[in-house]
Image (cartoon, rainbow, N blue to C red; front, side, top):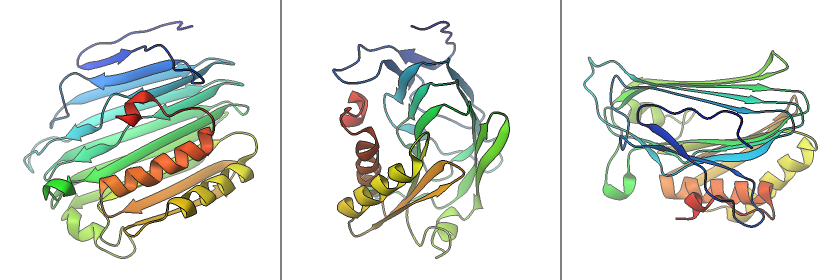
Length: 253
């Protein structure tokens, strides 16, 4: 049951009938067709005590080219997950065009007994179309708090010659797509092991993935040569963690 539902501007959500075996939930969409410099977008989602729901996105988000003098687009997302709740935040990847300027943040507040599965993925240019994000700006922040205490902070700051920065061995070693899968809840060590097994089974040239565990938080990283390889590894990881439940239909298109 949805207690409150508000939407305005270009951000919308739809509430499809859940497939058999799937959690109820919502699908978000940006009716503007993408994000341009100067845009301001904000999303807030709350899972109340004992709630279970999946929130996904209808398609990959696109961040379009801007002039170097333009203000970055700003995207803010806030998630609250209450006691005993099971939350899934599964947007599809964000594609940054050459010259894109994006300032993005995700703030997650968890109750100690909450369970959360989420994915965040970035693609630096549509390599299948011969595109590369050579220049631009990306400021990206992810923060997790459990019962008000900061347990994880992850910041990406790329500015200027993005392609050259990504080419550095300690950054992405030339990869053009990165993703994080984050999970917290009971049985974290077993979840980490399932992720490692899934990545080993899906391993392919051009993609690397690993999973670690700290403070009850399972963090998986994926770096790939392109968005297709990255998505392959993400889907393998999500399938392993969701087991008998199908991926949202929008992920299967």
